Length: 259
Ligand SMILES: Cc1cc2nc3c(=O)[nH]c(=O)nc-3n(C[C@H](O)[C@H](O)[C@H](O)COP(=O)(O)O)c2cc1C
Image 1: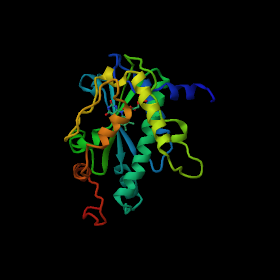
Image 2: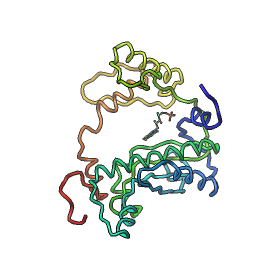
Image 3: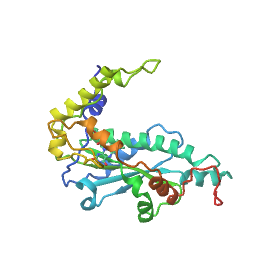
Image 4: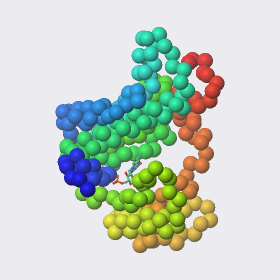
């Protein structure tokens, strides 16, 4: 493995969920946002909403960035050029997610390099309509993800990841055998349990339905945690489609009148 300050910042990064009350100065915020802006883009379809009202923020972070998928600015530019956007909203959303995500991760690494910490918060799409009203978002702007940021008041270790052979495939997707899957699971579960992650956070997703709880913090690891999420939550698309609709996105071929 190579080593340099950028790789070091990337490899020591971890989500920070406790912050000091120190407010990052403006030039630090500007540096983080500039790093975000300079990410590669398909179409510059990302914007950033900053809120500094730390007392009200999740995790008590002094800064809360909401990363927006923003088609509105592109529509304004195209109107200046006498064009109308005909590309479907699903394609534009996809490119917007690509742009906005790269922007957000650049901000995370920039924050790390400046001695700050951050934590992504992924639930905002489910409250997109409320967020859009509160922050006066025009149609075709969707809050993708939030980023809590500030100076860390905790120093957790970097968290485990899958083994490399479960992530990097050369030329051909492998046929995973049970042993490879179990080895990857063991790396994650042993790693999280060794760090006492769920015990310290007192976090175990409750079982719904008639499954009986058989886990304790001695046995509850990341693979059980993540399985409980995607095995129990959000089976219907309706809730999310409604949030998109409220933000002016439509995922059918019937063009809206206003387009
Ligand atoms: C898109 C996204 C959404 C996330 N949402 C949340 C969240 O709502 N709450 C939270 O505490 N952590 C959230 N996280 C942080 C993850 O839990 C964290 O990145 C993961 O457990 C790996 O840990 P690490 O970031 O410390 O390496 C989110 C991360 C991403 C990338």
